[in-house]
Image (cartoon, rainbow, N blue to C red; front, side):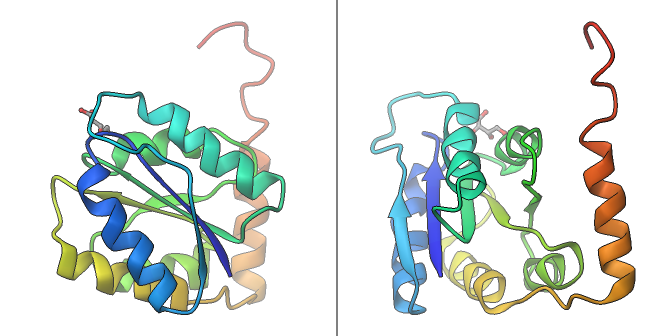
Length: 154
Ligand code: RB5
């Protein structure tokens, strides 16, 4: 698989670990930045990963910020993006198997490199089961992307 990896300054310290485990797991890692601890805005990096997925340039994405939350919130605003903060290995694979999550969000201020390796391996090793009940639920999730588009400002 091709995997886009991006972080903000808060996630920078884990990015090399993530890139390395993606490559060692036999996948191609695409590094979309940031490239230092200089402050940047996490939505800009969520957008880079989301666009790469939307354009079919990658199969999965991994975003790293301080908590994982901001990056996931931003990425989930984009059509077709299903991002989850997963700091336990069960969620890292079950979120793909049931929810077809395509972006793993990690918080570098919360987890260390050893757990990061296990989370990325669990995420990349999992596949969507394609079971009818999950497809039905995901179709309802997709419908939510249009919810509120008629409102002026929220
Ligand atoms: C940056 O300081 C921090 O707010 C960001 O990395 C992230 O934790 C947001 O969710």
